[in-house]
Each structure stands twice: as structure tokens, then as C-alpha cells.
Length: 134
Ligand code: ZN
Image (cartoon, rainbow, N blue to C red; front, side, top):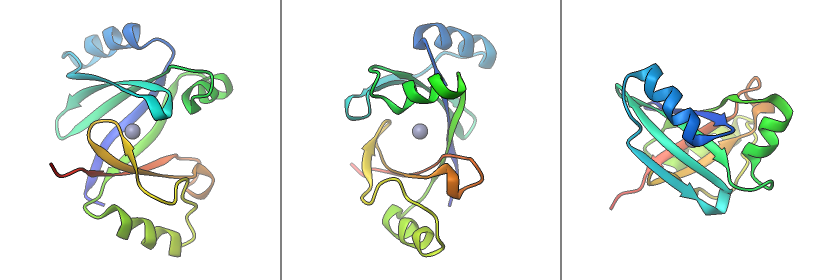
């Protein structure tokens, strides 16, 4: 793993949280992106070499909606940048980590992503992400 790419935070209202995080971080978000396949709307802030990703559910079906219902708003996942996601997925699977998707899928911010079940990582939902080359 190369670095912490971003920290994902589940929020109820993206607009309000954008203002709150802009105040907290002293800068505006640089992008808003909807990931229709995941039923989420996201916004991103740069903090040094890392990012904060705010996630708002766009449907009841969204895992973010379910998360907020169960646990409330808060830190939802930690994403690590990897250079070869398939290789990393194989490595972790061999070690007994439970992957939530068998194939990398298209995530927000031009990334291929794969999630690791929190039950196999001390309660932390881990996201692997690899930049998609243009
Ligand atoms: Zn993420």
C-alpha cells in the first residue's frame, strides 16, 4: 500500500457538511461526484497528500443510508492507494481477508476500488483504490 488516499465520512446532508468541512479545513471542496451504481453523492477535499471524501446516500438502497441508520454519521472507511489493485486483492485474499467485491469496480474520483469487510479488519471498512490511467 502506498499511502492513505482518503478517509470516507458518511453524512446526512452533503451541502451542510460541505460547509462544515470547508470551515474545519479552511478550504473548499474541489469536486462533487455522483456514483450512481453505489447510490451515493460524494465530495472531495484535499488535505496535504490525502483527501477527505464526504458521502451522502441518494437512495435507501445505499450502503451509506444503512450505515447512518445503524451507526449515525461519522468515519465510514479508510482508503489506501495501491499501484496494482488485482495483485493486492489476491495477496489479501490469500491472507484470509474477506473482499466485498471479487472484481475491482469503478469508484469515485477516477479510481478502481475494492472493499474489505470490516469484520476481517478490526471493524474498519478498508478500501483499496488504484488510479485509472487515462
Ligand atoms: Zn472512498
